[in-house]
Amino acid sequence: MADFWIANTVRDLIQGDVNEHLPLERIPLQGDVLGLGTTTSIDNGELTFLQDADGAATTIWKCQASDGGIRPLRPGDGSSHFPYVCFSGDATAVRTPVDLASLCEVRGRPLQELVAEAIAQLRHQGRLAEAPIYGLRLVSQWESLVITVASKLCMGQQRRNTAIASSAASDGSAARSIYQLLQHYRLAPEDPGDPSDPIRFLDRSLEWDCCGFFDTDPALGRVTIPDPHAHLHLHGCSTDLRYGGHLHHEHPGTRLASLQRLVLYPLQHLHQLVSDLAIEALHFRDGSAHFTVANRGAMDVSDVGVAVVVNDRYSGHRYLRLPWLAAGASETFSVPLQLPAGTHRLVVIADPEGQILEEAALQLNNRASLDIHLPDV
Image 1: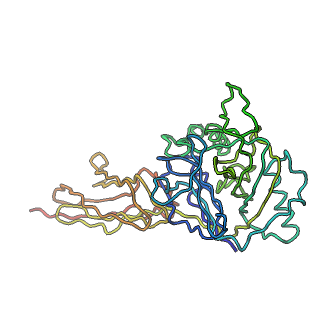
Image 2 (image 1 turned 60 degrees about the horizontal axis):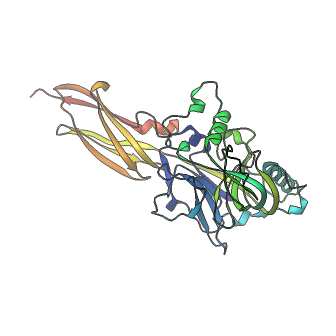
């Protein structure tokens, strides 16, 4: 059985202001590792997981929003912290090739429909285990292809998204609005030459090596947009390694020519990687509040606020901000407080604005309180 990890979700990402990150170093890339994701708001782009030529390892390629180009990621190059990424362990043992001759006509058919047909066939034949999410690799030839590449719109937004600001907007409509606003590129045999066409023509590189996921319950927004009909999320690179991005397979300007390869992977053990901030060791000594902010979760967090509140008076509270706190790390603070004699209630709160994505049960340790009794001198 193959394990599958999700660091944040697509639902989290499209809502914006994601301050949780998973570094490249925490993704094991030995063997056949499937995954996709997005890079940081400093250097936006899509992530595509491609197997190396010898099949012994997997390389993550970064697809650039500025020009649709690609490059392999290396630790320390400034793009190696991901606000959203999902990835498997080595899935070699569950690799299940599809007999392409068994599929009905391929040319011009929606890719999601073809993948669903392949899953159903293999399940019926007893060759594919039931799973909540299926990974896939494919090599495809396109008559025309529209791709999108994430830009600053998808992360670090200044809003929790215009599309969902209206109470009438659903998650699905918000996600569709996001994809409409991303940078689009067109690959085709010829440049359409239409100056009014908002989709920029890239090139004639129409053979693509792709990796992605088919979610049986896409409304959850785990690895696809939270839409009950959006089962397939696919990233890829042209086989000449010139271009890459999110395959807009449902776009009217996309038309499939053929499949050279399709492999499915049942991913049965799902793991959610989450953040968990905590205030620890709060005490008052020598006129100062002393405490530690710890990150007990599996995600690095950025731009974390910490409020120090005395006697529930927020007008005079102290406020600290941590630019970065890695998973498993902690930082200790000493905050001077000029308190008169008497009894005081001290409360320290990590992430008082609720900007860090934490499950409700994990938010209980975000605050610590202390009663202080100061005698008359």
